[in-house]
Image (cartoon, rainbow, N blue to C red; front, side):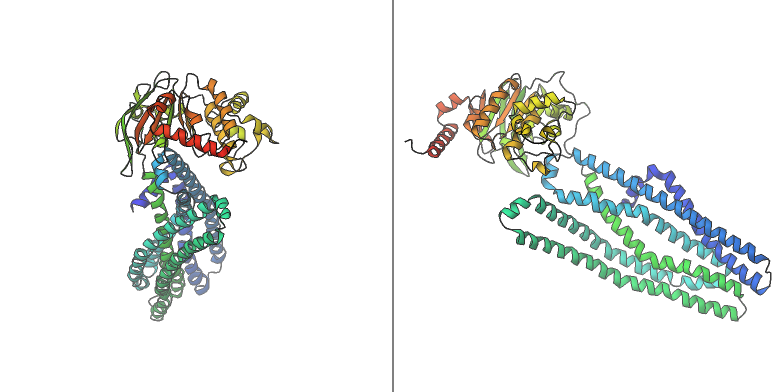
Length: 581
């Protein structure tokens, strides 16, 4: 009932249209309820008593009822369909906007395929309930109650006779609902798993083909598909056990009513016209009984779908902007880590991190894979919240900053470059949609992307494939650098952003960035010594803690971890060159 109340809440803003539609549906049902009265009059007054002059009037009245029913049905269908589409639109937009506010942690734990399943299949289940479920339930309930009332006035004995079956059908329907709901829930879960499997496989198709694992992936998909088939067949089997029983009980009403009516008529307790009129109500009473399992099926399916949608809606972000949030009058990029500790999933990632990056300085972060380098820079945009210590930007704790204003001042070039299925120009302009074309070109020039873009047939209007397909790794990284540079941020974060380009291109990018980085705080995460040796301060992380810090020269003199990195890279470079002739 709680879920149904929430669905009703979604419809609240369209209550006027829903009320009008239900009023029209009431007219439809009333036209059906009145029809047996005219049928009774045709039999008794026209056929039995011979008042033939009433036949034209009665036929006109019956035709009028048919026209009213047809017109009301048409308008009602349009209204409910429009309401269902509007609610579906509101729910989809609301859910999408809500997902935009979710922190990184949410996407670390929830798979994209499952989220897509909720936004498509589950949302359609809710829409079907509004479009057809509400009107069906209302129609059958009103028809059942109305037919009982009208039939009671005609012949109360027949009404009591039919009501004998109602408790039996209600008990069967209740048992059916209890059995089918967990099955529907498992079906929706399996649909999400199947959708995730398909999404991941298609997104990684190049890897699948590279390792010739098509058969393996097909087998996995077939396994999940078979599980979905099994659960759907279980629902069908459950439905098939209860539906025939409910149909049998409701179907027995008609012969029992006819037998009872015939006995009453033969004993003079009911005239022929009344008997004919009463038979017109039998279907209105038995059909709702027969439809009960279908209605329960539809409602239970929709409620199960809504549970998953509301789960995401109720999954509030643990990173929220406080009411007294503020921003500095002007961002300078002064960053202070003060004894920062961060854990993820109960495991320590960063331990007691303290350092200061003054405006305009370049801070390099190095360390082995898993040392916490990328995590450190994501904390500045408050994509995760720290457990202890303080992280301040321009003197304001990041937890007190206005989130969007803070993140706009941090230009981020991620380790894994993501480009949208759009033009190169719009990909570069993504963080600053109001930028001029000349500014886009300048950013591309700084990132050493202009040359390959101009070489393309459509130049900046070239549409890249999904996730940047069609571009090399180095080209994608250069577009990502241009995108970050264009935003003109106070803080620029380059997370291993030149790893996919050759050393010559990297050098050219660094030369171009030299002017751009002036007066801008820069964080560089890299493995190449050439990328970090000119930094004002180099932080070497080991197991989540700062093991060494200092300039390139200072760290070489220590002959510690950093010195060993330099030696290893120098040796590797010498080996690559081979013996000099």
